[in-house]
Picture (cartoon, rainbow, N blue to C red):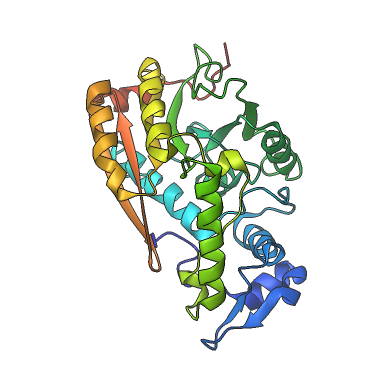
Length: 313
């Protein structure tokens, strides 16, 4: 994990139970001799996430609909910290902090996890977008339920499922960063088959909790026609008109074999700089790709000249 990830040393269940007593009934003794929760039980996963958010991110209330994605928080935190390093490279090694840094989360989901982590760790302002009205309503409820998020996280409905930025980013609006956790699968059947396989492996597993993977999620969170490479390549194409309004674009990439096609799309779209950043959580390997249409001097100038607040046109 990233060295700034507060989950680097695993879960301190005594501390988590103190801030979130309802977690206690889900904690079990694993075969390894360590305490854990039953990751095959969605209620247990939600209770663990709520405890982590309370203990480490100052969140009092958090809930997601039963069918929505319940994310593995340590892995999500790694993405945020690695993006902070990316921004620091354009800022003489110092991570930009505070409300002047604006981030756009494409597909924020009901869990609103990236704005929660990004604001708690670095004080960034967030706009989160989603096409699913259920996710939008749940994310807004999570923001409104927590005083520390109100006024710092805005949730917007993307009315057109075929568009990533159009209709979402105002003509006079600027962002330092865009992040995205795209749908991985190419069909509902593929997503269901993978989910079943995870359940079966989880039931047979004797590995420690850090090696296990969470599951779940509504349709739009898990799959789209063509899968992640089609989604990402569309995102890249649609990012071109926003080259001067968003300094860094980024997205997670689940499958390393998709990177060559993504790089080809980035070259044809005219990206000036492309970075692929590898991440690891236990046995799981992941990565994100980041691209900018601005060179380093232009990125610095954009950051220095941009007003701390921008109204949507």
